[in-house]
Amino acid sequence: MENTNFKLINKENLITNISKIKDKKICLMVKANAYGHGIKEVVKSANDYVWGYGVVNIDEAILVRKYTRKRIIVFAPTKDYELCRLNKIEFFIDSELELKEAISNNCPNLIHLAINVGMNRYGTKSEIELKHINNLLIDNKIKLKSIYTHFPITDNNLKTCREYKNFLMLRNIISQNSPICFGGSNVRNYDFNFDILRLGIDAYGYGKDMKKVMKIVSKVVKINFVKKDEFVGYGKKYKERFGNFIAVVPIGYGDGLMRGLSNKFKIKINGVKYQAVGNICMDCFFVKVDKSVKVGDFVEVMFDADYLAKKIKTIPYEILTNFSLLRGKTLIEN
Image (tube, rainbow, N blue to C red; front, side):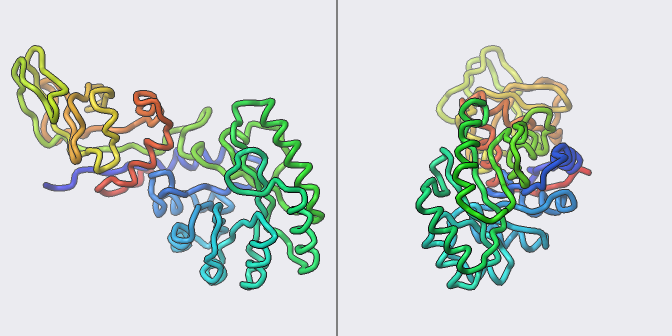
């Protein structure tokens, strides 16, 4: 069967979202295949509007380097010092030992320092460790690229402000005047003093006043008339009550459409919403339609990850990144 599936990336919306951040340098996060949108397409679209890019491993970093000369930061532990040095890829450290390793591997000009204020993922929260790091930085005359932290729960104003004060206390143990980089959804809305914003899902349209960047699109490839009391799909999870037309759309859980959405979501055909029915298959799902729908009509399978996420009590991040599995092209809509 011809592959009729594709991601539609709205370049204008991506640029509009990024451009709303007026007073910070933007480190655009493109981890997990740019949140499922596609690293190549996102980097090529955003390159003139960002300061740099963030990833979580060296493989992502090297892929990003194919499309840009701008800064690339690995926001997770890495020991790939030679690849970082050869490709000018920056990384963070959060211990004296890691700093020593970076120095011994001739990477003194690629280092960011991560501080932990409550996420308890990466970064140090030890005053003693930071004092050792500071002494080592002084002894080796190393200038950090930034001092970084990620706030874990920015919808809690009181907690986030306390974490900010904790960050300032820990940051002040480092005697040099380094740029400050913050991450965390909605941290841009706080009146904090920092230089670089690690911009994640907001850039892709999932934040206040942001525009959705990606749609998942397919076509109707088959229409069956299902009689009263007949079943649709695996497991007899949908029984037709009256007799109706059922369209087959060739996207399934093998393409990232989560099986938990079975019988729970609507799609758009020709601007009209229709109910998906039956269990989602590995490579297709079913939709109850009317006589106006024809084979070959375009189907907007995913037009709002928030909508799908609420149907199965998850987060839009999971919906979006799952579509990295999609077998099909990525097209940029200018």
